[in-house]
Image (cartoon, rainbow, N blue to C red; front, top):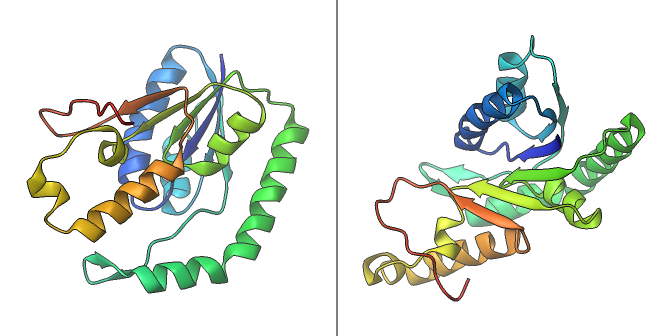
Amino acid sequence: MRILYGIVGEGMCHATRSRVILEHLLAQGHDIHVVVSGRAHRFLTERFRERKGIDFEQIHGFHLAYEGNAVDLSETVLSNIERSVEGLLHNVAAYLRFQRQGFRPELVISDFESWAYLYGLNHRLPVVSIDNMQVLDRCRHGIDVTDLESFSYRLAKLAVKIKLPLAYHYLVTSFFWWCPVSRSA
């Protein structure tokens, strides 16, 4: 099967998880084109440098700005706005290169990454979301989580909800022992 696999490059957890999944998919004989942003691009290209059946395209991705160990919301918004035009042009060029290569995916897998997700929707391909972030939107949480910092929780849940809203399937990876699926998701 030909798979388009998108990996968000912010943080390294997505890249680490996807490395294991990519190894498995390659072992099963699938052909994979990976689109990935940020530090995750170098991490993955170094690990798969000698492997056949996989190639990589670096794309522009969303960036989080931190102040200490917390996300600085205003700086995150400003820095992403500043880079938006350049990032959009870069990603359109990546899309055109991808189209010229002739790789026609049959499935899209997204580890919280929008480029591949949007490609899948645009080409009416099944999109599978594999990530831990969907735990915020697709699982029920106790009052100790939802009311502790109500605004922060709701903002995070909204961001996750609008990130990959129409995926064919959601595989929510988690360290939580109990994560019942929310009926409202």
